[in-house]
Image 1: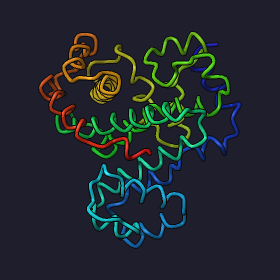
Image 2: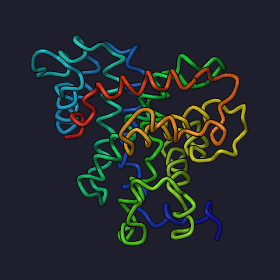
Image 3: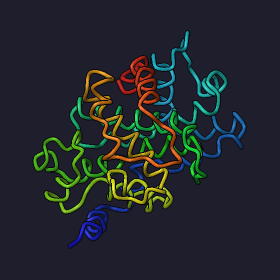
Image 4: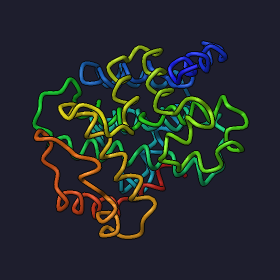
Length: 282
């Protein structure tokens, strides 16, 4: 059985309703269309889910956003932060909720959520350095980065003995190990999941975010792969220079449409060090 068939079997063994509930994809639609809705319409939709409101307000009031006083309502958050920031917060709250039932130790959960968020931030920051036409807008690139490892959350939720088979699964970057042990990998699972919930344009990018073999003209593949790698190195290395030393541009080549160099990466990493990212997920 090849990896694609294994992925289909993986999903066949899970109740479809549970799969669909893992990620509140209606929130993606809401966030993507937030510019066309009134503040009251946004508040009305979000207020139907008390747990979601709680998660959003917790993120809004985290030190990451640096607000000077406590925000107590969704309406107040929208007015203070604006729609673009609220989009990011809705997306992030959705990711946090998706990990609630995953078999994760606290430290691993924090690593996975931080890695996903940093990858998303890098995608968003590097967006202006991408010159080619893309079907993805900036906020969609943020979401793409945020969900690139959704396959790991699915596997940690529905493969009971996963951590026994691959103890280092959460921080593992070698998907060949996953294929050897399980016959599939988190990138394939995540890509297939995006197809199931109705976002097929995310499928191929997520499926290939570890591949250095994709067509060099595939700008978004390159961008996500780079953001993913920098995020991982950022979380596992102590210094910016050490990160740059380990970032092999020959192994992970960009293309003529992405104007990102080592100076740009160092500048971005310096900005990341100044952000209180942990506070988003405590």
